[in-house]
Amino acid sequence: MQKVSYIDLGLINYQEGWDFQEKVFSELVQCKIDNRNLPKSEQRNTESSLIFCEHPHVYTLGKTGSESNLLLDKKQLEDRGANFYKINRGGDITYHGPGQIVGYPIFDLDNFFTDIGKYLRFLEEVVIRTLRDFDIAAGRLEGCTGVWIDPSDTKKARKISAIGVRSSRWVTMHGFAFNVNTDLDYFNNIIPCGIDDKQVTSMKKELGHDINMESVKGSLKGHFENLFEMELTTTLDQFEKAK
Image (cartoon, rainbow, N blue to C red; front, side, top):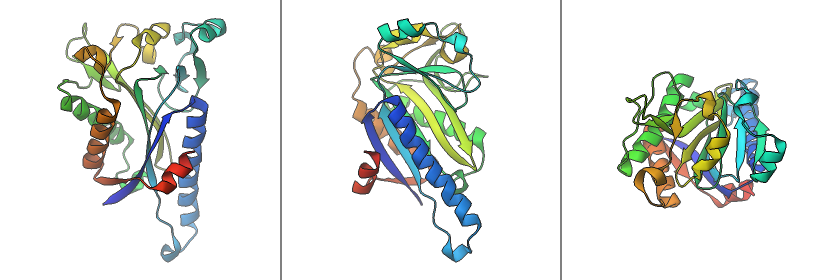
């Protein structure tokens, strides 16, 4: 069974989290490049990682997104205590903030399956199964990435988890944003994912009370292990790397 390092960065500035992601991602890609020039007996095993964190208020725009979907100017961003970044994932604009679990799987898909479409569906399925653990029914909305509540009703459909990834040499980065106890007012300042006729929601809004974040993380981790047929490991070294 594939072993994957689990790293919880806690609440971390978006730029710091992005830099850490890039470091882990680049090391994994470089390992694969180096292995190509080595005999099989000397090749190193590639080490995948699953990173969880929360970010202070921030809006991020994917490389295919439109800046017009951010409805605030620089002064208004400052007044809201939020930052804005153009980043190198797919997808359009989204919001990250406290009470939201952000997952960054940095996986070598050569160790799982080399199919980006399947990978995206697996990320969605992890969240769908986690929501089921908390008695929330969720699914997919045709033509849209992410996880939705009431996806079969176009008037009621609302997004609870956004997904945007980048991959190179079958190594992934970025991932998903899952609204648990998120302040949804911040979504009013954007056109989320460029979709202007759908709402966003959170576990707290659906259930009417705060949700224990560690319980949700535990459920997510279990479904990652089952779906990807892997074992998550946490070591002191990984915590040191995360600092």
